Length: 91
Image (tube, rainbow, N blue to C red; front, side, top):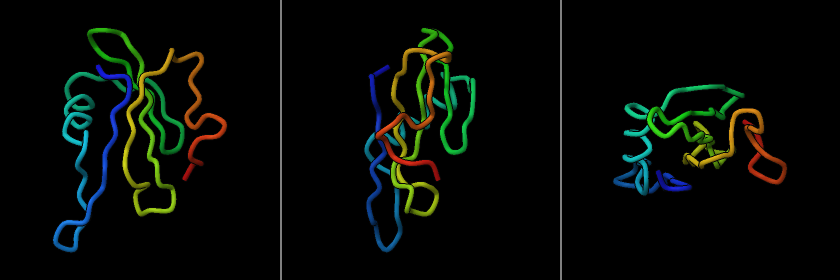
């Protein structure tokens, strides 16, 4: 998996839709990842085959639903912080 994937929201005919890496994120979460831990709007996942851990967060806390998603590879569950210091705040 790539080190970081990002949704991008764009306005299309008056509606917001996710583009960018949205389809790949959806596919990975549905087919290749297992949820390990949750903390508010952040979720830690483990890849079924590689064992690699990834953190799913929402990047625009002022938007409805948290805005776009970011799926980023992290070291592991023991070092996991949902929203590390200096990142986007929790919803």
